[in-house]
Image (tube, rainbow, N blue to C red; front, side, top):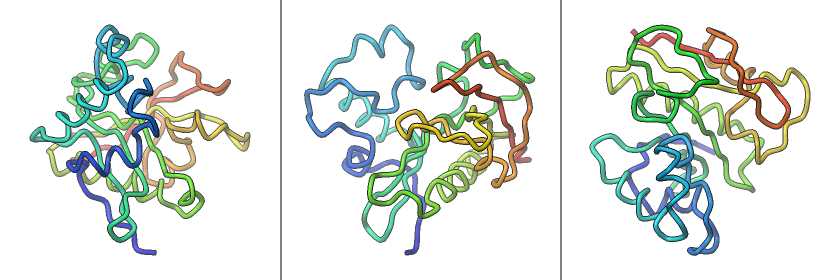
Amino acid sequence: MSIEIRPASVFADVRAVIGPKSPTATVCWCLSHRIPSKLNNSLRGPARGELVAELCKAEIAPGVLAYDGDTPVGWAGVAPRADTTYAHNRRIPHVDDLPVWSLWCIRVRPGHRGQGISHHLITGAVEFARAHKAPAIEAYPLDNGDAKVDLTMAYAGLRKNFEHAGFTKAADTTSTLAGHPRILMRLPLT
């Protein structure tokens, strides 16, 4: 298996990884931290996918995709923190005034998990942020130690995977997910 990371600019491929099985379903589409809460709560069914399709056309793609050959197998949501809800999140602190990027979601398709794809996604997101001149990248993973995490709630990533990629803990947060504390981890890029 040879995994390649590319900008998430092909909507059909993004839909294959994070879109719902039913076009009328109201699922995240990785918009929960991308857009203001009021807009996120107002979008229903196909409108969510339509917004993601527009994001895929933007100058800066809404994230990165992992491909096994031509098959999209994973997603990472990554963008300037200022363009996400983390810009005003009261539970996730700001370490300083640097215009950092946020990496807030990692998803690997069923049937492809347990093969190290999340590691490729983290590395690809870091390179994507670096290519766009980000001074640093942050993530807000679960600090779960050796405890198991429900895969549905593991989208934020796990501390050990970010440590493996060179991130270090920069701050505690008051955020929890699936009963586990989240921490702010950062990797300088310049």
